[in-house]
Image (cartoon, rainbow, N blue to C red):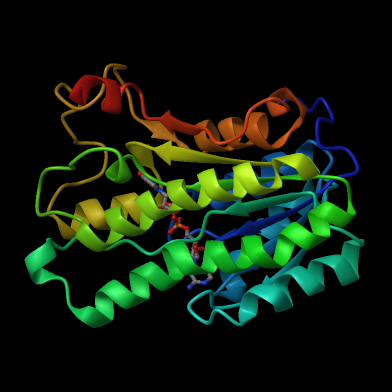
Length: 265
Ligand code: NAD
């Protein structure tokens, strides 16, 4: 991919910037693409070795990034992450709330503990990171927040259900609408991406747990396009929303799903 320097001089925090297995997760792809476009990137992940792989990719291409290891299940970590970014790079222009845990259980099978952990990592952590970053963006004259939601927030997924995951991902849309409206006057834009069937480590592990080998999925009744997406599809959409091309976009949920949501209408 060629760079056009769209994020030159910008500082971006990307959560879940590693990948949870072989292949490319969306956080890693976004971090690498943002660095190619000139951003200095703060790589947040729970696991150092995952974040280090992303850092190595960025540095091998001459990009700039540093790692903050944090478990987003601990909500007090949000302010530490933003403080570390400001201390290292002076400001924050972009926040991508990408880290998440999946849960493939129906409403009736979801324990209180599972519900609480999914809501904490997938919704409350983006809330607290947004809260920590908005004053920095206000002081810097604006910024862009991109929340990675899911088409699970927009329609039923079939199969066994994903009640906690879908609830948390749908909550990101409410958070987006409120923050976009409240702080648009300060030049802060907030948008969501709802990935569909994207070939990433997290998705492939979930498929294997359901007994489906990655690459063998029958897409005929699932998406309009004849192929799955990959992490770069999400990264390009995030670049568009976070960067100058998205300057008049705020409060928008963008499905990047090959037509999956349109097909279910
Ligand atoms: P991935 O598992 O490859 O990467 C997620 C990263 O987040 C991992 O490196 C993991 O270590 C990190 N992480 C998880 N919990 C964390 C925590 N508590 N604190 C800090 N870091 C943590 O995942 P992916 O498939 O690239 O998914 C990324 C995002 O895309 C998620 O928000 C996911 O819900 C969303 N999404 C993916 C798909 C898909 O088909 N892959 C579909 C819809 C939505």
